[in-house]
Structures are given as C-alpha cells and as structure tokens.
Image (cartoon, rainbow, N blue to C red; front, top):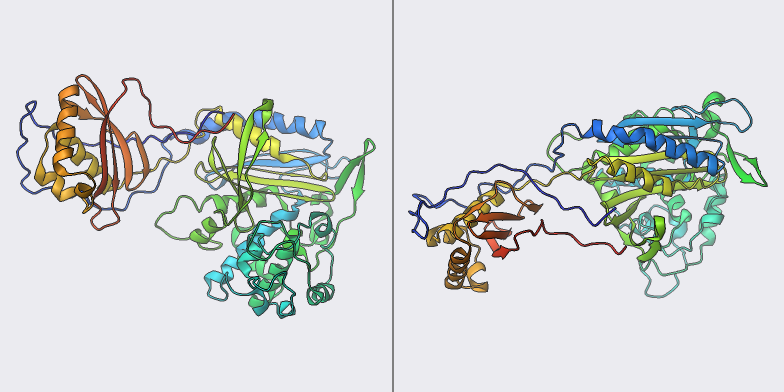
Length: 539
C-alpha cells in the first residue's frame, strides 16, 4: 500500500468572470456573503457500484482464510465482511469439534473473549446517556469495596470509571492471570476487591491493559442498573440488535451450534474445558456467532458519518463514535510489515476498543479476543464503511495478519475509498469569491467576505498587488468546478486553470456566523503538480 489517500470532491459550481482581461468587474448589486450556510451535507461515497466492486475480492479472501486455517491448525472458523452496517459476505469452514463431522456454519457460536469489553463499555455509556452516572465519577461511589484502596502515591487521583474504560487505572497488565478468572463467583470477587490490588502506575498516567478493570466495570453496570450485568447487556444491547445467539453462558447454547475450543500441541488438538460465566464475565465471557457479531459491528460502523436523522441504537450515535475515538495513547512503535517493510504503529485505546492510525487507511478500530481454545477479531475502517470479522476455535488464532491481507484485497478492487467530505455552502461561496478576485479585484466583494483578521495579517493593498502580479504571469484563469481537496466543511483547496499555467487557492473560514474568510492563499502551481498529499508513512 502507498501513502495516505488524498480526498477529492466533485461538486459542480457556476462562476462569473469579467469579460475583459484586466477590466474592472462591475460591482455586484449586493455583495454575496460567504455564508450561504455553514452546515455541510454528510460525507458520502461517490461510486454507486461500490459494494458490487468490493465483492470481487470475496473469493480471494475466502481462499486466504482457508489457507490460514490449514497452516495454523485451526479446527474451524467463521468469517465475514461488513459493508455499510450490513453483512455483505460470510464464510465458514472446518469443524466445531475436532475429529468429528460437525461443520461450522454462520450460526455456530464461539467464545469471543476480550471482545466482550466493548459490550461492557457500551453498557456504561448507555447508563451515562441516561444520566445515571458520569465517566468521571469515582468508582468507589458504585463499588464501595474500593473505598479503602491503597493508592501508590499520596497525590494519586481517585480511580474513575473513565480510567477503567481506557485501561489507565494503573493496574498491572493481567492477561495470563485474567484468562483464568472468568468463573470466579461474586463472593470471591467481593473478597478480592476488599483486599485491594497492587498498582503498576498511579491512575490516569499510562496505558496498561487490565482485565480486572473491566470486571470492576461489570459490577458498576450491575450496581447502577440494579440488575445482573448479563441481564442489562441482554436487554439494552443484544435484544435491540437482534443478537439472539449471543450469551455469556456456554451451557445455554445448543450442542449442535456450539464450537468446542482447542489448543494445538504436540501435533494434535487438545480440548480446552469451557469456563462458566462468573464475576469476570464483563471482561471476556461473551459467546456469539458470526451473524450476530456482524450486527454488532454493523451498529458501530453505522454511527459514521455524523448526520441528522433518527437514532437506531442501541445507544446514541455520538456515544458509539465516542467509543471509537482515542482516549488513552500507547507508545508508538516501528514494526516490520509484510515483505520486511518498516511501518509505524500508533494509537491506543478508546472505550472497550483499540483505536489506531495507518497511512493506508487513517482511522482504524478493532479488538481481538483470546482465551484457552478460542481466538477472534473484529476490525473496521469507520471512514470507509468496511469491516472484517473472524471467529476460530483454536487458542490465539492470529487473525491480525489475515485482516491486513483482507483489507489489501479489498483495496485492490480500486473502490475501497473513504467517504468524500462535502463542502458547506459557505465554503463554496468562498471559493467563488476568491476565484473572482484573481480575475478582477473587487474591494466590496472581499470586504463582505473577509474575517476581521484577514487584512491585519496581510494588508488589502498587498493582497491586491499579489493577485495582480499572479494574473500578469498566468493570464486569465478559471477555477475547476470541483474542489481539489475538502479537508472539512470550512476548509478547502482548488485549482485554477490559466492561459499560461495553473494556480492553486486555499481558504479557511473563521468560527463566526456567517463564516468569513480568515485564511486565503493563491499561488502559482507547478504544471504537473498533483493534489496536495497527506503525511506519508515510513516504508
């Protein structure tokens, strides 16, 4: 994959130019304000056949997964592609029970381990949205067993719900230990809470993955909602999404639909006994099918882009997006990618979800799940509307490389592109104003459009002289109908085609109503220069 994608927007505009070169344009009867409106339409996909073209990659993705199952000794698996909030493709292979003819299908139920954490985070945000708690509340308000917690320093902040959601509580990383706590009883957990815990860092200082922290969040959900964690998640998340196959108790799943878990050891599959639901279920106890998981990931994807209109749930769209934004950063690291290419991995944790940045795709959201006998992954690109999910019944199935390759295959179709950002009417009007100024300067036109700072930062006389000099070098110019780049509703760049070359213009509008031009630049552009590029990744 190459450097970051550049966004180009197609909007067709009409422009008015002076009839004679160098002639003063007649003043408009009423100078057009920059702000015909500041609200832009939501970003959108521009290819009407996008989904059909992306589907061309599905057969190769199926072959990729089949090869992974064989080389990694995975008894059975199910996988899917989610596009625009809907299940677009599903695959299944192998067996639910090693050595037995028990085919995996789209409704086979696998344990998803730590992917449960996002359900817990969603439950917390549901309670927050109802006004029943705040993310900055001290946890001890709802879990009084923690009031006697011995903090590592006298200036440590009290542990908050936000600390737990973002893995910044200061508890030590506990994956090996946490995996074996699922079956702990509520009484055992209460005793554990009362005894207290060691800290590896003061709360709020650093990222460190904590299963314990999410187990505590499960108790917060139960205390605030006045119902068991599993009941609250069932009624507020699973039922609204139609996730009828999803549960925290393996014993509830019919035998003909339940995948047994295995580890590969000594050239054979060794069964892992299923752990019952217990006090740590909120950190990793969920079981689900690929169809149900597609509904869940579809709901998270459907929160994008921000827009007007009714809310489908299970929680507010803004809260779903909040889960998928970086809350606690991890240390960036350079790693070797496929083919020995160096890449920078940067990101951290949102609320129950990992969040990262890549130069190939920008915003990336995911979470994996691994317990004895199972490995799972959900990964998606919010601005692209596409996700890859997979479930397997072998310990730590290593889906990450497969997901990377699957996105690469989807990108190879040529239509895995982000939504195109739309300019606001105010930005369109600013584009027209600045383009007309290059053709023929008009004091009244720019004075009606300028923010208070524009001529303080560079005088009107100097700006007039700069545009006159540019017009003298390039001759008459006409703006392209579309923007070259729309960074957001109030900032954009476009190209002007001239008699003796090209010019490139940029504007940024001010935070005023109406939005006025706070930044304006028009420069000569090299004849063959392409669209402005975003930051590139080391390779």
